[in-house]
Image (cartoon, rainbow, N blue to C red; front, side):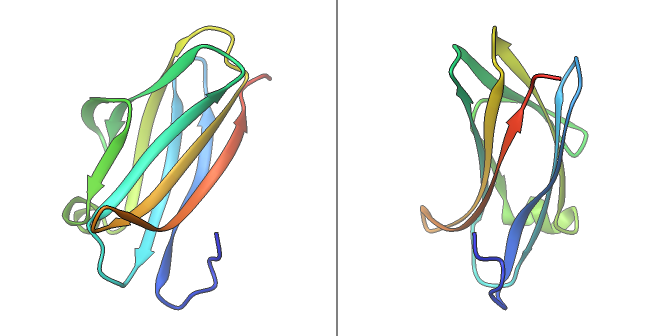
Length: 117
């Protein structure tokens, strides 16, 4: 990601892994036209999926998450997402947050997270 553009950015501010969940903080500061952001994950070297269970305190049940621009603006560009791992032996995951405009990714941020402590 090239976060130096004046138009803004999407940024994964932090990822905290606990025994119960993965807590993801995302900040959106994008001034150009867009429809929302998509958040998805990939589990490396294991059979498993990440299921999103909460966005800003609201219960969800999704494997690929889309958050509309309206919802992002209502939360002042700050998203707190909670997810759980389904499956076993996951040691490393990728989290990707993408700004979507007219079905196209226009900007993204991603983070590789080691789950082993």
